[in-house]
Length: 274
Length: 359
Image 1 (cartoon, one colour):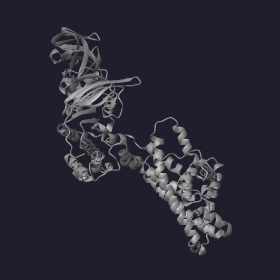
Image 2 (cartoon, chains in turn brown, green; image 1 turned 90 degrees about the horizontal axis):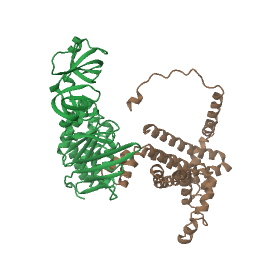
Image 3 (cartoon, one colour; image 1 turned 180 degrees about the vertical axis):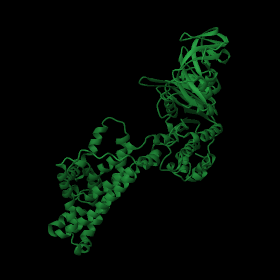
């Protein structure tokens, strides 16, 4: 809004400066965060880059990563948006507990997540056993397992982003829609969802980035089979053991993807703050 | 469902009660088809709550709302239609146009929600935009519309969905003075065309007087006065209404041609009556003098000027004394009498200028 940008009197210069000990520590933190990334760029074997990236294993891993992260994101949106709606708009006892539960995968070590997925969807798991016995479907060590593992760790990002957007949205628009004769479902599709679309987009990008980088839960639950479950992070890890420069080259690709995502997010957050 | 559907005009019959902590709203309200009733009252009187109750956005604690033969809500019979099934159009104070939809899509929304096909809904939306004079703004987004335009789109959106009852919450409050005049006249025209019952909530007396056939004045959740604008303007029953219509109002006891006010002062009135009464007179009927005026037909009393305020081409003088009153005098009189805050004057009102009616 234009009024918000109206030039205001410049804030008076603070008389108290930064606490002296903080400055070197902050600089150290900056170096700590920046140096590894810089190192990645500096140590990239530019001469063999194209060669490394066009290897069959690299392309397979990249394709698998992109496809699985995208599928996981779709799954997260399909299930996560309704969950976010329930958390934001629902009115029932135990909602706080439910929200805490949703955020568990955020703090859970990914490897533990992978083990947990085994107990649920493994061949002897709570869901996995009937799936196997009745339908002959086994999840672990398949591409589907990659998607499941990625969705498991990434969904909280989407749910939290969308829930925040829903809480921020003016619910009176829903009331206006109701007075115009719109059913709850129609209102959700035509009013609520479009109004929180920026939040859904931001959540989806975060979710996708998290899924793309997923390593621990994936290798635990889906394994490491070239072409079916060996995603980029796993490929990078394995390559590092036998050909470090190639691992740096592969890492650079993931770095570029992350930077692109960050840039996209920044834009989103700047333009759709409301 | 086919469009356009024919909606038989129906009257509103409501008796709504809710309790919010220490606030009680108790509003019996009947509006005939085609009639416009203004709910007038100060902020916090419960006007907007009443509209939300009628629209079904809030549940009644007790009472009944019906439109013609259709019961929208009845706490005794445990009937309660959700807002989307009431066919009640509500124009919100800040319009709440859907920001992601164009003006046309906003107006078409209700039709689409009720199952109209896209082309038919668009056509009818365009018709409505034409009727409110915004045909060439159909593809604009709400943020590209001025306040007056947004108000008209909101009205078109509410009317296009074919409501049987139209509710307007402070329809002109968000507009600046210039736009207000024009939009008020337009709104009056559209309300005249609407065949169903209309309830307009406002705290602005002029809006109420121009738009409504009948006024219901709400204070603290209770109806304090109801009647045609002329009746209310002539015979205000509370200080709030008196202030709105710009009259001095007193409560007292009449005995023939004399009324003893609650404060102890007496006023001579032209109309002889007895019992508890209200006495009203206009600030323009109050004359101010340096010295006690002669003439026996006048009420006169000593007063002190507490406030001077320019109102157009008159100066409103607030007086304290045994009878507190407002007097409208010309700037020339202010100069001639040398009025300023604290000036001692004599105030006078002719008995024939007073209006007396039962309390």
